[in-house]
Structure formats: structure tokens, C-alpha cells
Length: 300
Image (cartoon, rainbow, N blue to C red; front, top):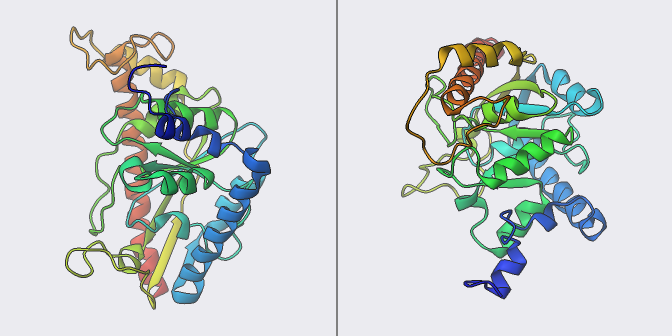
């Protein structure tokens, strides 16, 4: 038995291979019944929050629905959005007409390990709910990012919050983390990247409601606005060439970056590539945010 091996914890969490409770995230786990139950229950809760307790309107929602239901076989979908509250996912998928209770169509999502995977019960719940734990500060090549890449390789739908944390201020999109860009660049089939901006979740689940804490339940009588953009296009061969030409050899290394991972790109070129992709996503999200503000005013 390996030193430090804890039977009750390491076996159950499945961390020996580097991926927390990976067995619970498989579609065939207990015949898929736990996943169906959780997705249905969470979807029903989200619909109640979005449509009964509050008022939700969506712009260009048909584009998202079409890509979730009918994109070409084997082509992954990667949605990116701002992050306003801990309820963004799943409530942002609960607008009328969206198949939020369909376990097969449901998104995979990157979720903060320190929030959603605090203990065995939460870990199991979020795992069967198609959540992938991410250690903030763990680097873009941590093992669970490889799991996210596996889901894109499978042609699945993955959602990320590239800002990396909740921000409830009405402010420009912050500098994005490079993890989302790395997934786009490393995916065998370039995913369809769809930007989304939303407003109102900061009022449904404010971070500082009472005594610096969130409310125990979602608030009601609020307005949620969701604006879906158009798919983004990335010319990755051209972007890789640009990264190679613009990067310089660096004698220092963070220790987390493989020497070659994308077409022979060294660490400096990888960083240049990820920065370029991230900047394009940030610009698109910011433009969509500005459009959404005028959209919200027009709806009032």
C-alpha cells in the first residue's frame, strides 16, 4: 500500500489517478440514474428561480438551443460568460424553451474545488451533476483541466467562467484566466465558442446580503437578462504562427508548463497564444456586455 494512502478517503474520492471521483462523473454510473435525478431536480429548481420567483428574458436564445441540440456530430461546444453569482449555473440555462432537465444535453462546467467539493457528499452531488473540479491557482495544466479537454474531445458541451471568480460590480470584463484559451488551442477539434452575458443574478444571490454573507435562499421579484452572442471563430494555425514569431526564448520556467504541448510550441509561445485567444474572448464579451446594457434599457 502506498505511503499516505487513506482507504476511506482516497478510494472513495478516486484521487489516486489524479481525478476526484471520476467514476461518479461517468455516464454509465449506476445506469445513469443518479445523473438523471440530479439534473432533473436541479433543472426544476433553476426553472422555479428563473421563471416563477423572478422574471427572465433572453436575447438570441435560439442560437444556444440550436447549438446544444443540433451542432455537427463530434464538434464540441464551449460557452463562456461573465460570473455574477453562485447561481449563474444552473439558473442561466433555465429560460423558457431550453432543455435544462435533459441529462444527455446538459453542460459540463468547471467548478471551484474549494466551494463545490468541500466534502464527500458535495463532491458526489456535483460530480454526478457534470461538474469538473478546478483548483484555483493550480495552473492550466492541472489534471482536471485535462479532464475538461477530454470532454471537448468527446464533442461535449463545456461551460467556463473565464474571469475565474464572481464579480457583482457593473464593471468591464476583467483580464481572463488562460485556462479557457488553453482548452480551445489543445482541443483536437476546435470547439464552437459561444459568448454569453447576463445581468440580474447579483440581485438574486448577492454576495453581501446580510452580515457579509449570501442569503440562505435565492431572492425573488428580480429581473434576469441573458444575452447570447454569435459563435466566435479562431484561426488556430495562424494564431500559432503569430505566437511563434512574437514569442522569445525564455530561460526561466514556471515548472507547470510542459516544454512542448501544441505543435512544438515552447512555454513563451504557449503563453503568447493563450494571451491572444483570451484577449479576443475578453473583447467579444466586453462588446456583448455593452450591447446588453442597451438591450436591457430597451426592454425597460
